[in-house]
Length: 523
Image 1 (tube, rainbow, N blue to C red):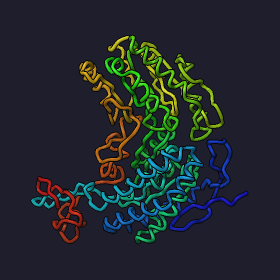
Image 2 (cartoon, helix red, strand yellow; image 1 turned 30 degrees about the vertical axis):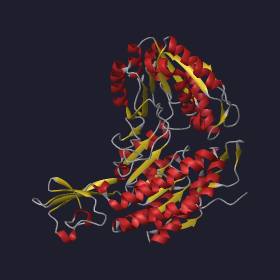
Image 3 (cartoon, rainbow, N blue to C red; image 1 turned 90 degrees about the vertical axis):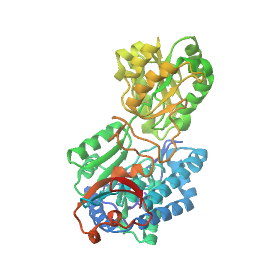
Image 4 (cartoon, one colour; image 1 turned 135 degrees about the horizontal axis):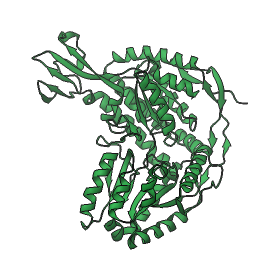
């Protein structure tokens, strides 16, 4: 049996104090991979927390330029190891090398790290304020050690040691304790090796980045509630996210969770009549791209069952049926998808394309289901559920009025799409439905599917509970996303020379915008 892989704690690779071990799975074959990974005891977690606490104090005294230098150097090192990272991610997740991993997710990840570096250096996220008349000043500062729990579906862009939570936490001056995902542990190990080297090259504390692998569920809940933790970032299932959220908030700790989302798509009658076949192509691509394993995948689609609507459904079913089995992230995910589709069938949903059965250890063909608006209104909780993977539910309504009442049953989502006729024929319905979507989603998209998310400052990737929480924040979009891992501190009556540089009268390097004597000024 191969040796158990090490963990990274306090700047050193060391054996874990294990309770058990596990192997990642090759989704293409369903077989275990060779490497053996540890499930740590609390002793490893405690050691990481102690080291992170010391590192947090050191980071708090460092200039932002040093944080930016680390993020830039780290991005460069990851770029140099891109081929190794892509190969590892493909082997452990089954996601396509091209274009998904090499041409889309890896460039996005590198750009995200560099955006974080620019935000750390420039400092606008700190929202510094100075009131000379009362000698009161305030700015945002890091919270302390940040724990990152990543999801299975984005090994780079949301990875434990590479993703947006990691980048935002470091940009705020927080050390990170990363918990690798069991679905792609090799990716986290390679990335942590490069992070460790970049720390040495830029002079940051060795414990700024630490990596553990498996944890017992009780230790995960204990970790997020520990008083040494400044904040936690979690992306994953609603079941796990809610447990961690309850544990952290009960202890008064900060936590950001991004969880399940149905991402409703509403197709107004004019749009369907005008370009139904084109929309069917877009919806098929959105539901089946990467086997539907996106947090922004459309999980429920609303339309009116008029003549054009019925033609659309027939076209869509044919497009779904033409796609064969797709490889999912692993057998467990496939089992959950089968169970979700089975639950929808049991509740009364009808399958129009595909079957509710696995096509291999980790493969499933796309599934299109249908319910009526009347059925959904009678049992909304049975049909508005996330089936993570290549499946979606059509809600076919008898009228626009019924459609609006059905849309009002949707709970909080990350994204929502509204398709309207380009000739202006759906304007009244658009105005009525968009109000419902804005109340229920963090991001509302016009005439485009919710998959595909630009990593730009204005992007919002978060929404009302249960899609994410707290809803004010976003997992994407520097510098705004940094505020999930920061707090505001007020300096009342301080002597100028004792103040942090960001709130001194002399503008800090980078000259961020600051609110000085009731006006925003550069510097």
